[in-house]
Image (cartoon, rainbow, N blue to C red):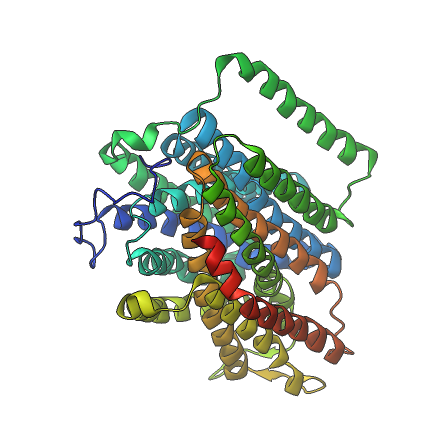
Length: 486
């Protein structure tokens, strides 16, 4: 079934090769998320500028370091909310219904950003988009995972193709919103994001009835007798959050750090629930243990990679030579460089894993390679320290390293989270991977605040060097991790 199928059994669609050698439902799922990524990355491409640009340039005049931290906190919140979307799918509604409702919420959030001025519009829009995106991401990924059996060697290649489809939206989104922002203003850019999500919602609504009935089943239904208890728990959490915000304990200045703490606490709770659950078999627990070092490496990776929307965004606006034959490229367009490389090379990587088959490196080695290359990307900034404007082609080369690192880790992380998931925690295991992204994204906002343009060397050396060290340690432990995976 779509959210609960035991992927250790032969996939019933193993003979379906109608979409480039993969099940045809892969095309349907990535087309929906393609438009969601168009809206999400289109909005995020101009979000930081909207926060710190002055009012006469259409912005909100928020302090630049604070704005970078808020963007990191927002990104962390998006991935943190995947646990809510996953829980609702596994315990109450099933992935298909949660995905549909989440898409509606995302569209409403972009409409709020487009139509409501000032801080109220920013808060309403980001809350709706953040919660909706979390619900959509976890469930779309879980549905892709059910298309393949555990021994199906197309699995990693399928996730790479899914990733390539998503990045079509990530490529076009910032190009459209960045151009509209510079020509007509920020709210036109946010409006384009709303239209993009509306298109994705219509596509999904037209095809959702073609999904198998299993897509609407609930793998671990919450007993009626427990619903009141869980309702009170969620109400209590909401009250605690409200009190923390009203009293100022959590405020804009420490929101990114608070989000990182929340991701850590949520992850510990999830791991504890999985290990203590009577529905998890001993061999499944070993697989979850194997996932822990991958979780840590993933968080470290995203702490660097997600600085595309914090440090790289500011760097592109202030230190990058964006002059092309006498025309200055919008700074937001830099966000489309990575998706271009993804589209070009995701298929190459998918073909490589398919060709290598059982000879391909294990998931831990792929994670280590991704984190190592990500560290090299930040070390590559060192020769540029103290120089004037950075040539565009140089940053393109560095972002190519970002892309190579991403292809080694991100689609593989989505794949391995579904492969190692206990049957009773199928979607929620995907949420655990996204919690590592949440933690890393919040850290990206915190780290960006430490960047000092007048003394760049310690930043690049510290961030890049730490990533390289963690990658080497993970590679050294890969044989033990592979043994635990079984």
